[in-house]
Amino acid sequence: MKKIIDSLPAQIKGSLEAVRGVPVKRKKYTQVLICGMGGSGISGSIAQALYPQIRILTNSDYMIPHGVDRHTLAIIISYSGNTEETLANYTCLARRGVDMAVITSNGRLVKKNALARVRVPTGFPPRGALGYLFTPIPMILHACGLMERNPTRELSNLAGFLEKERSRITTRARSIASRIEEKLPIVYVNSYRFHPVARRWQCQFNENAKILAHVNIIPEMNHNEIVGIGHPASLRNRSRFILLHDPHAHPRNDLRARILPRVVQKDMPPLVSVMPRGSTPLHHVFWTIWLGDYVSYYCALQSGIDPLPVKRIDRLKILLSKN
Image 1 (cartoon, rainbow, N blue to C red):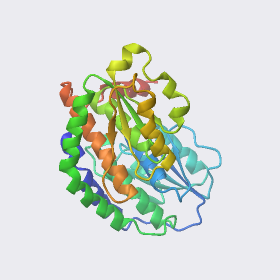
Image 2 (image 1 turned 180 degrees about the vertical axis):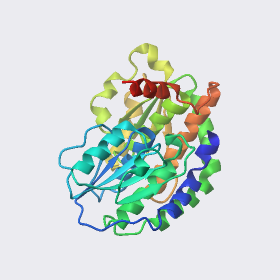
Image 3 (image 1 turned 90 degrees about the vertical axis):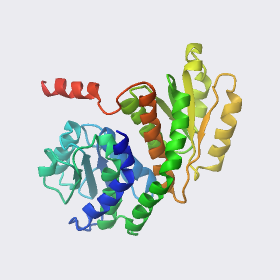
Image 4 (image 1 turned 135 degrees about the horizontal axis):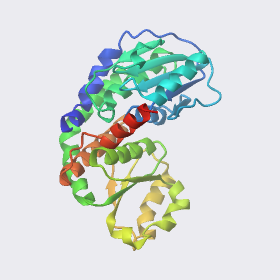
C-alpha cells in the first residue's frame, strides 16, 4: 500500500498525459454534476471545494438531483467501472440527454457512450488512485469552457511540489500516527473548503487502518458538538482530536479554532494541529490529503494490519450481486 500512496505525484503527471487530446465540445453549461462513490467520488468533492467559481454538484446515491438537465455537464467517475450506483446515474442522465464525461479504468462504464472518456491505469484500489481520478476533472472543465485558465501548469507544479515535500510529510505522518494508536480519531477543519480533506482522512482511517473516525467543521460544530466533547467519559482518553487548518479560512474561524481548546480543555486530550505547506489552495489541499493517507498507513502498521484489503466491502458487494 505504501508504494500506492507514494505514487500520487506520478499519478498526477500520468493523468496530464492521458487526458491530452480527449475529445470534448464547448457548450453553455450552467452547472456540473460529478457522480461517484467512495474513493472515486471524493475527487468530485475536492473539485467542488477547489473551484467555487463553477457551480459543481456532487452525487453519491442512485438517484440524480432535480434540476439536472441538458444544460448540465456530468462527470461520471468509477475506478472499477462497475459501481452500481454510478452506473444507475449514467442510465438516468442518458435518459435526460445530459452530456457526460467518463473517468474509469475498465468495467461496464468504459464501454458507455460519452462526450469524453478518460481511461486510467488498472491495478489500484479506488482510494489509491486519487491522482488519476482527480486530475482529469479540471482538465475536462477547462476543455468544456467552464474554466478559463488552462490548469495543466498548476497541476504539474502540484506534482513537483508534493515530490519535494514527501520526506517532510512522511516524518510528520509517523509522528501523528504514534499519537493515534488504539484511539478514535476526531478530525475537525476550520473551513468548508477543507471538509473533503477531512472526509478523505476519515475514509483512509476506515479503509487503511480499519478504524472508525469522526469529522466535523468549524464553525458548525461550535453550535452543537462542542457541548458533547468529553462525554461519555469512557471515550475521553480513547480519543484523539486533530485540527486541519485551511490557510485561507475565514479569520473568525481561525479565532474559533484557537479558542476551542481553551473552552473544552478539561475534556479534550492535547490537540494535534496540522498547518499545510505550499503557496496555493491546490497545494494546501493535496499536501494535507497526502499527509492523511500516510497517517492511516502508519496507523495500520502499528496495529499489525494489512492496509490493502477491504474484506467487508468485498463481502457486501458479493451479497448485493445475489439480490
